[in-house]
Length: 214
Image 1 (cartoon, one colour):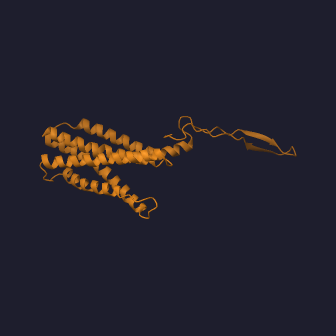
Image 2 (tube, helix red, strand yellow):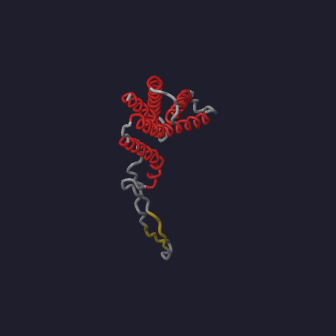
């Protein structure tokens, strides 16, 4: 029983706690690409990771139905059943993606984004409830696993937020000494030799990290 519960936990952690949020991070990286092969690579990586996540969560659900008592008297089981259904709805929606020229594209995008975000957040929450259920059922110490999972989620959340700020930071010229040179004024004498004005000398803007993904 202990090994079965542990295997179930690993499958669900890989699917909901790791692959699903990683797929979101990767598809967000593709949005920075103007087009071409690199954007397609990110897109197909997203599809592969999410497909693996669906297969793993299905394996975990089947294992739970076969090996465990499913009385649904705790939050972990209830959330898990609802999450499993929504995961497959999201998978079907993903394969029904309209073309970019379609009028339904914006509606599809919003629905796909919303469900993906909800699935990831609820999946992370249910991983914590699973660790708690494992502790109660097996009387095992799960503190170290809780700390490790929290560190992983925190790193992914930081990277998620950092993606939004990276382009802004590049424009500000504060990354790795990427600071615009100071403007040096020069004096230009007018024809009357009595009036002077200050104009900036032209200078080339330096950008040490023009594109993170180049």
